[in-house]
Image 1 (cartoon, each protein chain N blue to C red):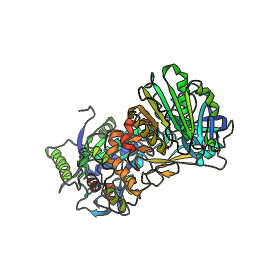
Image 2: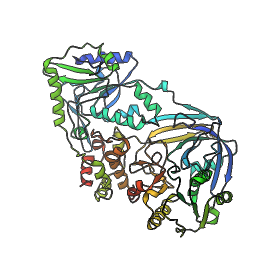
Image 3: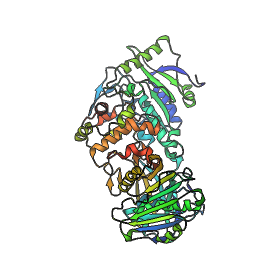
Image 4: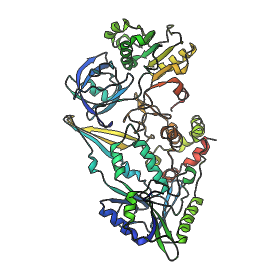
Length: 262
Length: 367
């Protein structure tokens, strides 16, 4: 990270603020010192709206283009409301990147099945770009993106570029059910991101199709404040979601997923 | 034995010599002090600030001062607050951002503290917090500086409270390592003195300026007897065999409902606990958002919005929050930091307004 103290934000500037849907926008940021900060798809930054607070937002841009850092954000509270009003040239605080990334290395030579629900497609976009950059390293790449309504669909401008390299299925359904497209579990790694309920049902469906827990990765979310495992808020059982996650595999987390109010 | 390990004894009144030495070296002394109706840890200057002749009675939801029959300076069981208060302060400004320029806390402005009378359990607690705040790759630089600045004068305990269980947690009563100077206060009918051992170069340098004498044959025996006596007095026990697994399997035990009926989620236990480390960030600014300040403030997993995500708390019920605290303290800490989070100091038992006892609740939920 550009600041050598992980608790202190670096100042970035807004290069672009694009409206994706009625409540989702993408901020494109550049570091003030123009020094690129490398990140892995799946990682997140803490974006700081001055004097208001921070939000943990996954990075949604291509990791091979770090000076063109993007965060796709849904407006849900005071911080994200504040960040939505940023204009080109405005400063914003950035701490990061934090957390674990998608298992790109471990999945080489395999097929990838990506399942994104709603705003969950945002961190997956970074992943999709990373996979496309090294397309020859993977077998089949299938992306299933589901949204509740047409108006919730984002990244439509990227669809054409994606479809030239991977298989894309877009489903509009208020309660999307796993399509019959579920691939052969052999040599396949699943990476999913979406509401926890969606990921739970996807897991059951995958299990029925003979996928093993260690083949399935998802990304978890909890209250994040320090993002360095010292404030305690993101704890889930023994895990700090900011350090041990957000990307985790099902084999590791299965015993905890079943515990209510953990 | 380390090169700097020395041992000797000095008269009780000569503790003031040590205090002066520390003052001259620029230390602010933090030690036990009577504060209204309890013994707390606060700034002290001389021997006369110490709670001489006082002890304390502690039980579930109970704290009372008690007069001792002798004039021991450190004859109390354990202070109401812990030394965490000084190494990890309840409020700390992290940064100020003014017109895009970030200003952090000046490390040079952090105080040099000499912690006086640190018990073995408290010393363990400090070392446990070191793991939280000073493990790579994320080191809390403010904590690290306070820690570097600190000098520790520990003390072997005279007595154990009914709420103590350091023996079960393997954290006492005898001080083992991590101190600069370690004292044992010995009182007989005719004598009152401190046995003093050095544990570091800093301690050794101070020792050389103290009016010490060599130990005599019975000094070592008196010290060991005192420690043995304290170990026998432990008020409570906790069986730590397979503790992590037992707690992980206890998630659905019906007894949690019982605790939930009593626990107020007031957080006294977490605030009094010397190892609890949770915090939250308070961000404020002026209306123009040109100047913004972040302050790190103590928080606890008992607070209603602690686990707030997407507009709702994951741990909504009082039951789930008490369960989180106990399971974490005695169980998950092992997976996270390779140590228990509990040092058996018993503060949570004393300061719980409804008298919930961690050792009792643990037994019930793992039965």
